[in-house]
Image 1: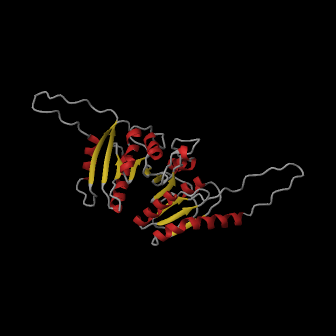
Image 2: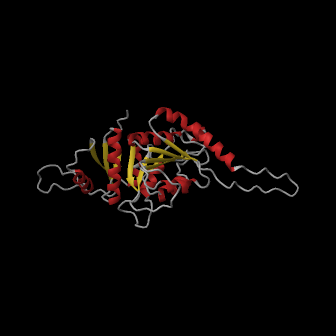
Image 3: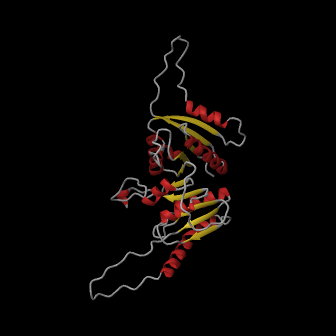
Length: 305
């Protein structure tokens, strides 16, 4: 079992306190420590020893003091440590990914514009951290109704059968197991298919049978899920294969969900920088539930691909 901590990034905002509560639950379920961090971009200068009574005192951290007060008296806390970092949050928080089980933060911090759906820090962490990053949205996000779902806790994960993200599936199954939740797997496929134009007199391509396409998607998805089902036989899996845009289905399924799990793009030779795909970014912007962005299991050197 891992002993790496769950990291909660705080900045004094209500959004970060909601993220802290999510991180507390996750650390307790994983039975790992909690590390509460605050990134201070502009550190105060050293305090002079006016009376000559000793070395200057370390600068205070009002944000971490606020968190300590917020958690005071609670009996259900995991082992916790507090750390203040120096530097821009969007730069220093992703660096914690090498020594964290998960990084959790709010979708928009104290310094963001009220109109922003996702702050730069959350975007940078989700894009660059070496560990999964959970972004907790503000309450009250409204999403369009999707397929009717049975009541009870749910973890949602997207599955692209052309390039399945094994790390995302593993994380989603593990979270569903920890939370005693049902796992809702969404393997969407584009429909209608792209129109193929032919020159006059050329053979016309046969019509595509949507039922056949859906059956193939379901068969492929079930195959990818089999190994994870064996590892977590207690997790009840609900596989849906809806036609249309994956983003819309994932966002709709986020209503009342415990978590939505999406993958991060692997680096490629012609795009060596880490990237967040369009589906992942849209889910981060619009989902009503926390969203976990999962890096690939291994990111090889792009020059070797």
